[in-house]
Image 1: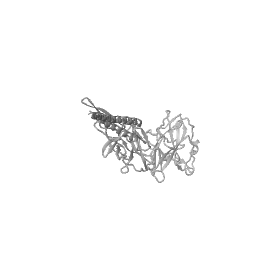
Image 2: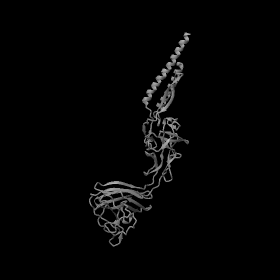
Image 3: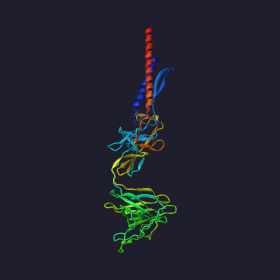
Image 4: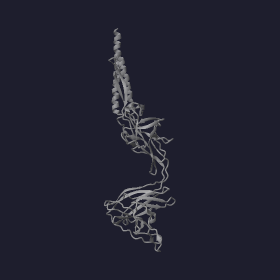
Length: 454
């Protein structure tokens, strides 16, 4: 092959390398872009050197792009080697460009090009349906109020606390009273409040006052919205019926439903024993043990204008040790009504609708894909690829499993372009281009010399 042809092959190959390098530089700020390298190969014919050719271009899937924080809930970065799965009008494609938004028409989660993010949806009961890819959507509207029915509550009561004896009730004409005073901190050892909701979404405050009765026993008085709950408003769960409550008497000898007191008893191991039936303090007759061994108090309350409430207070994890008072858990269910406020994505890819009342509702789970040979992926555009025979079929899973990586919400993966290296490559290819051009001009000069000599 002549010097002209060899020089032209060098110009052509170097021009392609310059185009690739320029494209890398141009996409340094493009989410999910992978640096492309130019691979050259020497040309031979009949054992003779015939110049150079671009044999392939390859994308760097090994190096992760920089994480770019935005605070946007649907900007998502993958912390491993996985790819998001998107649907381009029904054809599956794969990307690490995690800039998504919610489509206004059908509430699908889509890319800036309108391609739909794929994952696992939920059934009518709100449970995930694994194994079947679908368009992920956020279909939740506003949610109505839900009345509280349970409180998971546990604490440690210091066994070394001062003993406080609950005074005998006196009886004015309208109600039974006690010397216990919730405004007097010396009449109880500890207190703790829980916020609960009625069927209308109105909040109410349940406060528990704990008094060390001595002998590994504690008395508890319950107040709702600043008013004491009576013995008939407190119950326990068991097989046997609650025995007849002993009531206080007013000054006329009439039975009065008095403030209810629950007796908590602890074993020598510091663990809570089955509860005794609520009584009117300081009566100790008719106390019974829950035969099921349950440690639950039932709060019965009738708020104005709303449905009557029955709240189960689970105390099973409460303890009495010689350490400081401490709250382990205070978790009431129920909530007021809430308006849709946004979307949250967990590390495992679960997608939730969020509401103004602090509640969340599961909408689905993002699926990720991986490949035996990512280099074999077919390029769709700068940041999207299709599976091919060379890449192998997609291995589909969920975030935080295997090598897929987790999801980091509020950030996206930027390009993995090293600008400094690309500028060095640009200058190198520019010099190579100039050198190949010089080869051609030299060949031309030599040809002119030959023509002039003839």
